[in-house]
Amino acid sequence: MQVTRLLTGRKLEPIGRDRGLSGGIELAASLLLFVLIGIGLDAWLGTAPWCAVGLSIFAGVGGFVSSWYRYKARIEEQDVDKPWNRKAARLAADAAAVNDESASPESREVA
Image 1 (cartoon, one colour):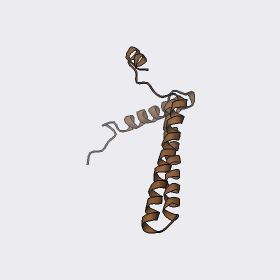
Image 2 (cartoon, rainbow, N blue to C red):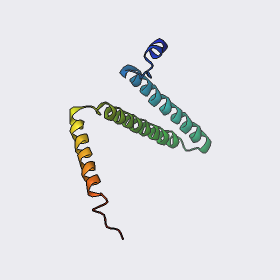
Image 3 (cartoon, helix red, strand yellow):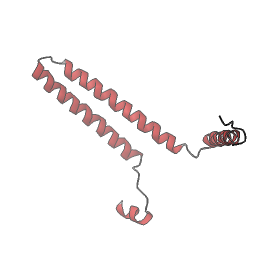
C-alpha cells in the first residue's frame, strides 16, 4: 500500500470493505465500552440495569447517527461531477452573476 502511495503521490482512501469493517468495529467497540461503563456505574450506584441500558442505547444511536453523516458526506463527495449536479451548479453560477450585475456601482445609491 505504501508503494502505491509513493508512486502516485495520492492519499489512499479505504475501499468499501475496509470502511465497512472499520465502521463495524467502531460501532461494536463503542457499544461495548459504554455497556461496561454502565455496568460499573450500576454496581457503584446500585441502579442495575438502568445505567447499562441507557448508555447502550446512547452508544447505539450515536454510532448510527455518526455512520449516517459519514455516508451522506461520502455520497455528496461522489455526486459532485454527476449530471444532475452540473445543472444546479450552472444555475447557481448564473444567479451569482445576475446578483453581481445588480450590485454594480451605478445601480447603488449613496446615502
